[in-house]
Length: 119
Image (cartoon, rainbow, N blue to C red; front, side):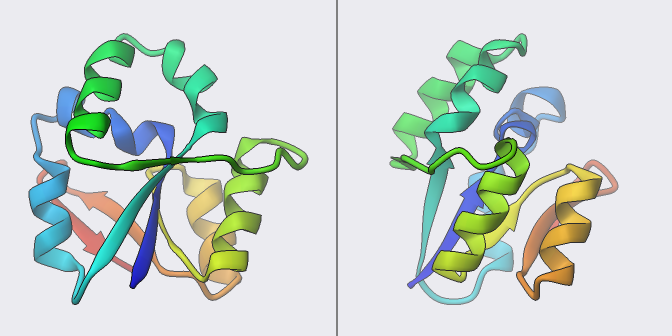
């Protein structure tokens, strides 16, 4: 089963752009998958205007909250965990996308503020 790590900026897409990312995941991911949200992203989520809504949505959609050991920073921690679990990373973060692709990981990103795409 494919694992997809959702980072903070991806978790707030439904509120910023009014896009159902969970329906979009079904459109772009083949086969079964498991959605993961790193607990280390909770502090970042608190700094957004969408914390309570995003947490409620993630819980309602049965996203697993996972413990990821902190490395140098949150992005590096997500990247290391992604490599370890051979997971796809759902992010809008340009640097994280670039590093993930360089490491051979798949990335799911928002395109044209309308739909998700796997790169």
